[in-house]
Length: 390
Image 1: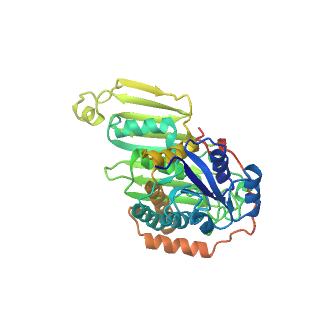
Image 2: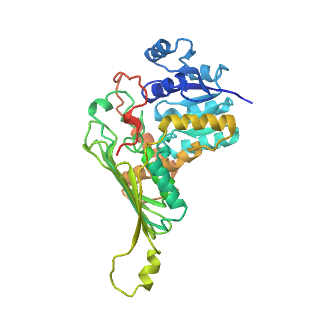
Image 3: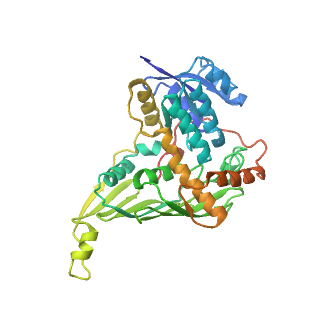
């Protein structure tokens, strides 16, 4: 039995360097830093300055063929996620991918199929699933305590970014380099939580504001209207151009309402189902008796480190993954459908026409004005930038 999991990280700028410092610093039990890979010599020099004995590679194939690692953490630009993960799985390695799973559902599907064939552990860095308030909401919905969902509304506009942020990398905010804007970069966590708690919609209508607040070619604002098979509806509003922004999730069901805001959860529960009240109550209007549950966790969960620890435990001991990689296709289906709706000007049913989406995205990538060079990447530890912010 493997006693320690040797992790190879590809992409050590930004969040990749935070994972590098976490694992290299011995913060994940049963996981060691086996190697790092990046095409930027400056980033490799940074890795050398911190941990000089860790092998460094400029070529991904060389790292995954080196025999020095048991698993690969993919932390590269989004369009490379599936391609690199499939390669790593093909070499017999376990894989943990940064979000999103890729930029297209078709690529994510190929990755999921490759992971299934490989028999290896495949996880995705949906670290916000570790936040206790979202886990509590999922528990209330899954247990039936909320009854049948009627409506969800998530206003998540505190993803503010400056123009300097978008200028910090040549691939950022371009169709060819990033594959999208706020829906592909910041909001995947929220889209994942939305479907994780409320389920997958059956139809999407969306409006995406391209370069509304920044000099970019992709969307920095999006509004999504969702329909579900049971007749429920959902609204999801996100932006990187609001300051200050809002983070408020409201889920209404036949047994009450859940509100998540300011780091806490309030559940107002009806004593009986609203559908029963509607057709049995003789009064035309009345104020219902409610049981109110207030949930205010002491902390925000283990975030990235908890996902890394869970991944290590899954490989070493068979622990159930918090965020299985195969589930990455769900939030990506919502964002792809939102783009397709915005591009075609109509409602999009799920599953949607993946070939049409790929064609339209390819056209935009071909006309993309990806910046030459870009700004200097930072080297970081985990910070508030990547935490759940209310």
